[in-house]
Length: 354
Image (cartoon, rainbow, N blue to C red; front, side):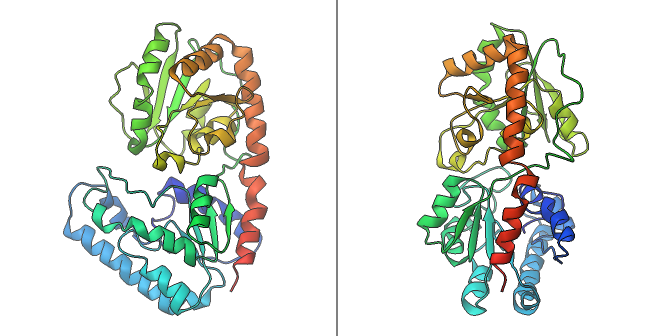
């Protein structure tokens, strides 16, 4: 996996939360992040420093040692996103072609699509986005976070692929609030990292127009306070208070733009909202339309008018919010909870044994 333990949401929810299952099944495992904790703290700082370069070089050396000398000691090799964040798929090629090893390839974004952010601008040309199709082809099993991602694996010539959604622990962590919200005014909420704030910004004009019709509070949970052209309450993201902060929402929103990168989104914000008993309103992009049953446990909105109409109805009708939230929670328990997917995850590991 790319990053140290408990640092990246993708690997926390797609790999790390299954560790308790592995322990129960007495399956031994070893974590092999590409960068160590020291290098990770430098990655998202601007510029190219000697320490950052050294940390990445050490990551390549650790990978060489792991692939050539240690991989033979394990029955299953599990690669999340890529064996190395930079350069061509050398390690995946060595495993599949030279050492003839099976490996599981897991991903939850359209990472073959070139994407530039302030954090990765310096490394953009070394990312080798083209390599993903080859990793999909060489993998013994591809584990994809939504149907669009799974179809990409199939089109790349994957021998096996399966849809394994990103899920939440709906028993021990993501649960509805013990007491019903009596927020006055009602709260519309959004959660996400600073790198995805542009999706919320795409919805600001709708929210400003909605403000002229209804009284509500907008709450934003993020790792950095964004600049938004609307009044809002900022709640710093914290792993200890994340669930409690979500439980204060009355309505959760997930606007997206229509592009291929967004099609790879796995609707995790929606899953978080619905798991805590909150109806979600979202764009018809990525996995959103599979997770939300439109008009039953949330709303899918194709236009500004639909956004305003859906949010207005939920703001005006507390009983409807609670009914849809109850049905949303049921959907997560059955299809998008850790408990509902442990069997599939375990079977995938068994199928990929050497």
